[in-house]
Amino acid sequence: MRGPPRARWARHWPVSHYGPVPRFRADGWNLQVFGPTATGGTYSWTFDEVMALPATTITADHEFDGVPAAVLLGLAPPAPDVTHVMAWAEYGYPWTGRRHSYQEDDDG
Image 1 (cartoon, rainbow, N blue to C red):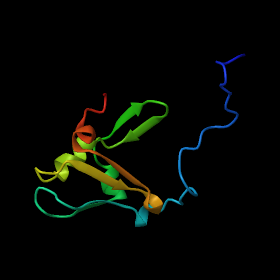
Image 2 (tube, rainbow, N blue to C red; image 1 turned 180 degrees about the vertical axis):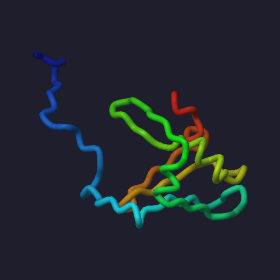
Image 3 (cartoon, helix red, strand yellow; image 1 turned 90 degrees about the horizontal axis):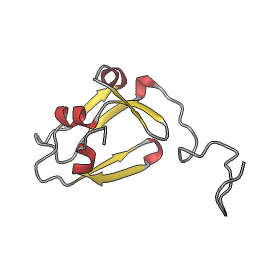
């Protein structure tokens, strides 16, 4: 089988993370929302509490199951003047995006 000019076939699955794969421990895991929220408060959920929230499946390059952003925004609404959302993962890996992008429907 041939590909396009100058393209090469991947022999291994592409890297989907940075750094070592963290060991998951549900008892120490939490999800926190802080910063300029509508109430000025900080919100925190344990793994079991997050797993009890409504979830959805999104299929793109991979299949992802998770809690839609709209659910989290309903539980911890941002202050009206918030324009961006920032998230941190294991090892401090950041993600920043516009609030309206984060609020878009999960189906596109």
